[in-house]
Image (cartoon, rainbow, N blue to C red; front, side, top):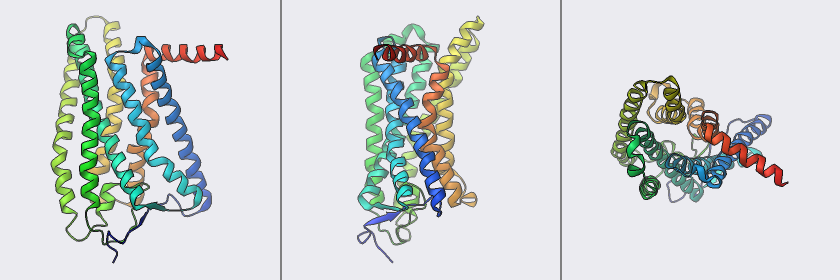
Length: 310
């Protein structure tokens, strides 16, 4: 049996054993990755360039785009490189770094989505107090808190996971280094320490989920009381993209970590991991740009302005 001190690398789960399907996986992930880079890059550039978008909602959206770019860049390039080379290897240090950044970015994104629900609640339910409750300093502090919580959680869980003795080989049954899969390699009951830590740290996540639900109940009650149909449509247009992003992120993430063991399988785990770690960063820009007239107008101005200068 190997132990953690003798492990120098891990073996990631390949998408296929045949060369043709490996190249197909490379091309598919490359297309998704480029779409995520383009979409999130355009959102970041547009919000930074257009001073009309320098509001709390777009400030948080810019942070979300940064997190999405980081999250997909942490997992997809390594998987593409392995498929192109026909390899499965990732170094021990590389695996630890991947776990750290995946946990940091996904945790911070969850906290940021909670903050964005508060932004929508204040904008719709307490519009007269919007500038007071969400001033520039408050927004900076809230965004910094989301990032800081992500860093804290990532440090805590990465250090705890990689301090466990590993006795079950070095094959990680996922296309990137994921804590639940690494725990399966730990010795006997040593993994229970990290399981206990995960259970304890889940309380803030449950609290955020409750806050999200309560916020949107209040938002929908307030929107339905708006007398004009145009006013209701405008209010829904500002919160539905966020609700769609939250729903996609939470349902795929919760299913990945809370699905029953009876339905667990390598192929299902692989599919779910793609759904919660690869798909959201690629489709989030599309969700926001399709429903947001201000963002579409600013993006059009930016693109047409760039072409006119050429």
